[in-house]
Length: 253
Figure 1 (cartoon, rainbow, N blue to C red):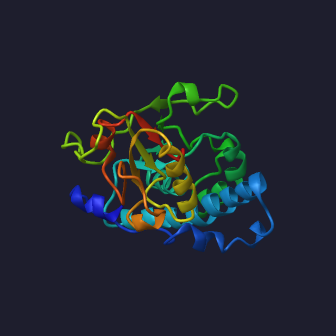
Figure 2 (figure 1 turned 135 degrees about the horizontal axis):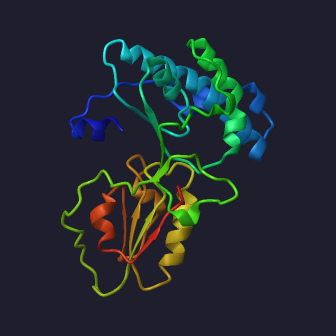
């Protein structure tokens, strides 16, 4: 994110561990676990533990030279709201992952331990976590009525941080009337090359104009030779591209 932040004229600081694998490697209890049991250990010990402690410390350190008026954090980053509470600064969570109320139960003990470490009283049920608001990016049809979201939830519709309104791609095509399909698995395709190749193999059996994006770090040639109406590129801003497309195929976040 450093490049788009600089392009937007924003100053940023690095905070917390450099990557998730290095954090997970510090959790020996995850060995042999799979599925929900593994997810619970990772959430409690990595996200509510190691990462929360690091992010709380980073925000408090930053506030020594630049004090925020508001802290906005994505919902799996659980340390900055505690630091903000210690600073007396309001904080708002932005939904980045699927909402699961069970995370309160998993996070309560490690986060209350972190609160007391920073001189704050314990927060039973983590009632203070979303008291200033929770911004959801999910439409109501994707909310689970059996697992209600926090009080004060407000819906927002994000805007893509890429150049909007630019010229759409005008690649030559034998049949300019064929539908365009855009295929992407995000900007990091590592480990998904075979899935992308299979998707393209299937789509190429239809009369389509196909645009596939593999991310900045993968050579498009790794997906092999393709039909003349298939273009494999590293990355293209989606705002303009989707204006020319009929279907988007993606990996579901």
